[in-house]
Length: 212
Image 1 (cartoon, rainbow, N blue to C red):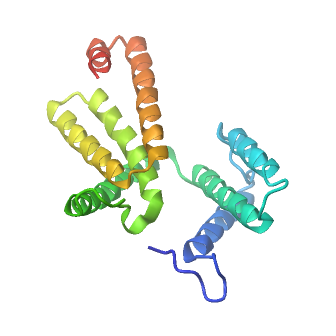
Image 2 (image 1 turned 60 degrees about the vertical axis):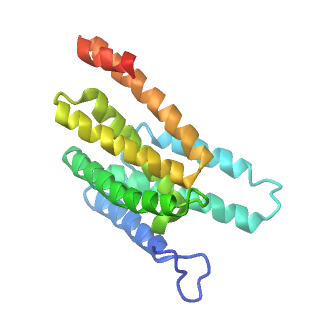
């Protein structure tokens, strides 16, 4: 919804300015508090590795400017992610996840209805654009965990309904890469939940994993 270029700056959007100010403010706050600019995280090294590999791929690229711009977008994404990790506290995670699930559910309903109305003959992303497929993958993973781990039947039914909604929305995008991510994430969640159920002797959870 913010993909409207700033005047005289082609390819630069309001969200880019917001991201830059956010990263800058988090870095300044950590410096003032006497902390390292980048908070320690197991994600830092993988991010640097991915950026390094992408940088190597720029050698001999057909369009250096476009390639550099694409690399910059990944740098921006990682910088925002690291800033968020450095900024939020543990208590903030659940409200943020709930917000993601709610917003994705609202957009999913709109997109699925649109997809059905056009008879499935168009890829539907909604106002968030191609990024919507990524939102549905993450939301699907959260809802799948909810189905497996919830103790109350009503909660499991609710999570299952959300999972079905997100899956239908993902299908409406017809994004093959996101569908592969979806399958891999679900398999990964099964492994994690299975390991947890074994260490906690949760026989019921193990049964659900096997059933699924």
